[in-house]
Amino acid sequence: MGYTVGQVSDFTGITVRTLHHYDTLGLLSPGDRSPAGYRLYGDAGLARLQQILFYRELGFPLDEIATILEDPQANALDHLRARHRLLTGQIAALQRLVEVAEHAMEVQQTGVDLTPEERFEVFGEVTFDLTYATEAHLKWQHRPGHQRAMARAATHSKEDWAVLMAEAADWRLRLRAAFDAGEPADGERAMDLAEEHRRHLCRWFTPCPTDMHGRIADDFAADPRAFALLVPPSAQRPGLAAYLRTAVHANAVRHPPPA
Amino acid sequence: MGYTVGQVSDFTGITVRTLHHYDTLGLLSPGDRSPAGYRLYGDAGLARLQQILFYRELGFPLDEIATILEDPQANALDHLRARHRLLTGQIAALQRLVEVAEHAMEVQQTGVDLTPEERFEVFGEVTFDLTYATEAHLKWQHRPGHQRAMARAATHSKEDWAVLMAEAADWRLRLRAAFDAGEPADGERAMDLAEEHRRHLCRWFTPCPTDMHGRIADDFAADPRAFALLVPPSAQRPGLAAYLRTAVHANAVRHPPPA
DNA sequence: GTGGGGCCTGACGCCGGGTGAGGGTCAACC
DNA sequence: GGTTGACCCTCACCCGGCGTCAGGCCCCAC
Picture 1: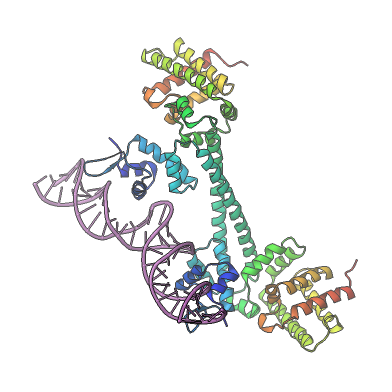
Picture 2 (picture 1 turned 45 degrees about the vertical axis):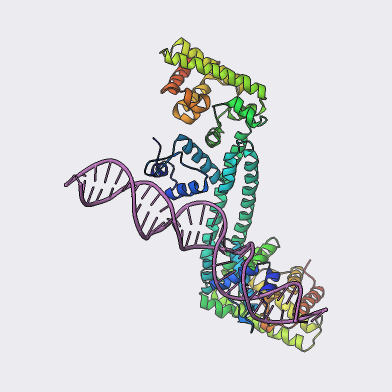
């Protein structure tokens, strides 16, 4: 009379090892032992095991299950409430992560048709920092133009990217030359470069009125990681991002957005 | 030149031990060592660490992070997709658990105002199997009358429960007596007992027309755990649940529900 | 030179078991 | 009554992702 570990295992789907484990923990001890030392579980044991499995499913740690079951089930309610809070918290956390993963995937789509070698050819030193790009994506997702820019970027072919990046590289050289030559940030040459950048964005990513352009330049000046996507660190100068920002805003004043 | 573990720890919030761990795993090795053997991390190390933390947040195991980072980021997208599926799956599982927890809490509310001693006094041998009760709650939640019965049960005072359980105990004795005496299940005495049970439910839990009563009796006959809530195992007879079921259905025919 | 902080390596602990190794037990069949 | 194969026992190490000592070196300031 009494079920052996194997039988209990067959009934419940739980492994024999788990029964051993619960026995050594004192969580579920067999009611009896056969002369040969076999564990023998009675109906009470099975009932207790059901309870254990119930709480285990809800994610309770084993020792907490033990206290719930030892305690004459007075305050199971409190434990359940706590678990409920914990579970909903975990759900919220996971949902945030899902969102992050989705944005990361969207970011990763950029240039997805390129082979790794091509990607390296095209993006070169402007390495693709998934960490930051995803964060930025999350930050900017509600800003007008961002979705559109991402969508357009995803459709660029390898040749598009090559042309685009060549233009950008050339523009970078001229920006740095102006900066090094001491051209004033609100002077004509700097403003022309700002305007050129704005048109670059319009052509390749999204229509970019001067006010949007201003916000983008603000981001570049505020966050080095954002600026690094435009000008690789090795090609930067201290103050270059701020210089560009000033030029962009000056250009916006010179060339106000169409009404 | 290069940051020590403590400095990196300060920047990133990660612990020193974790840096050691990642070093021994080969996941993030310091670019250099000081003459004294101190680990020194450069900018490349910090960048890599950022990536690691990004993927770690998403729940990637460390070895998978290693392969993602070693691989020239070709198929990070595949990994992200897999992770996305996994995360959404986890969310769904947790939501099921939350539901279970909610129902368990509702069940546990029954007689919540009673102290453990009172609960024992009142429920006595009809022990409260949270496992089964929660399952039943989930199964029956969309059945009319169930919500109402739970709500009413939650408002019963200790005295209510005492009266209720005494009535039930008395009824159980008479049911068993009829069964033992060989009274036919569709005979008058059995039908009277069925009708008495129906009125008991009406009075204490929810208005219970004969068709609802029939479904309840079906459950008792189909699931021993359900029947155990009405008649404790020690007081049962083989076939008693089926006997009651027949009586209830016979009573429904004799006493059809008001149109 | 000495005190206090930071750094090193090495090793064990945690949770919920999985996965053996090495050996006894049980029922059935030859 | 011996063998086979399925079952059971205990003991003990293994996983991941670190936390947490323990024991000892390094470095700077007083």
